[in-house]
Length: 539
Image (cartoon, rainbow, N blue to C red; front, top):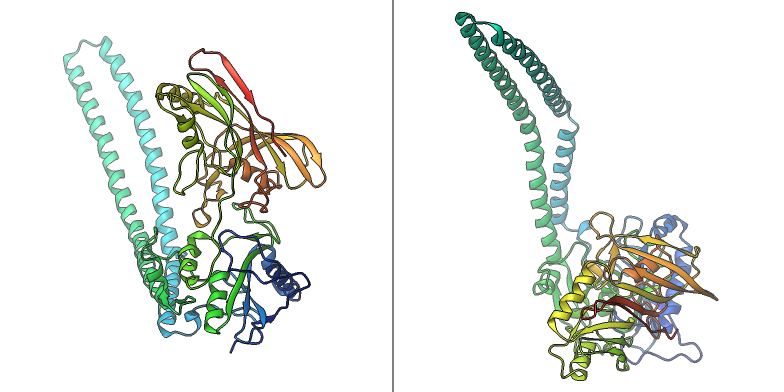
């Protein structure tokens, strides 16, 4: 029987109905029951002020609406990772595997790693290492200064000899000057060799200590990897069919090949596991963020988010087997609108929801449409791309030469582009520039993230066009062309802190993403004249 402190009662409100199918955790609109359950969890969190500081830093929580064998409704709640240093708290589902507090194998391995950590810290903080490092640095400075002084003296004495050679005719004195020169060169070489030998000895003494540290670090890494793999083997997960697989088996055929750190510790797997173990039927699930956004990612307090694909993708794919799960349906889209055409190129307006080029999913693309539309063309090629959810102007080349000529302009950043975007929130400044470097967020594909260490430079200019109640219409000018650049620069707290309306990745779901490529200008490859095209947005 489920723990009464974990299963929370829930009932249908007036006008509410049960979900017809289990929602897809990677693409969903939170069900009304999940929203009410999430509100109750937030109320519960408010009764624990001792958690508030940690939660304010940012944490993902989740709810799973379930039905008992007796037909009663309820919900489970969970959180990702630990809370207040523990994975076990009243009111939340327990961890799938808690070997850290119960298994001798883990405790022995953890103790060995802790012992190595202590040994590393002792060596790193030892007077012996500090002295060896100091002696090496001091002698390096001394040797450099000594050699510099010796070379100056050698140069001065050489200059005196050169002056004397120019005026003396005494052959004996000339031979003596040669011997002096040879002796001083040899003395300089001996001095250099002596310093090199002394430095080598001091370097060896220093490296003998650092090698011990590196050896301990290698051993720690080996033990950690062995312990983690063993732990992954202890994480045995269930699905609705009653099948069991551990994390190693689940990730065996994934792109990664092995589970990532923290796999199985997110809210969604923990809630499903508890439901299966206690004969509860999952009906709907949602995960929501509490607290401030991590600096690199876009997370807004109180918003619902899809499950992470890096850690949870393979896990949930297995755990949902046996449930009737919703599938993402492709929204119906209009066909592109022809804005301009000549024998070299065409400009079209792509509708939202249509791919620019053929992708991995079987969806109609502008490239396929153009191939049928311009059958007399030598070769039809889409010159640049827009996100599937973005509407607006696309440039199509009708030959490889034209495509290459236009591509050179894109690479040289001489193509002018402007976008219109309706933002969910008020923008403080009338205009400005956003510079936030972007990198792929592999744990939350296809999302991107702000990364100041390894991200690529991304630069956007903006100006406010119109202010509406709770929304702002802006014009974006991207000066670089990174994936999701405008979407993140709009939503990120260090950008405009106002996501684009309808942005399911970085804001809230809506009827459509209100981002539209409204203008493009370039040099026509055939006429060498600069041409421009505009297409107004519909929002």
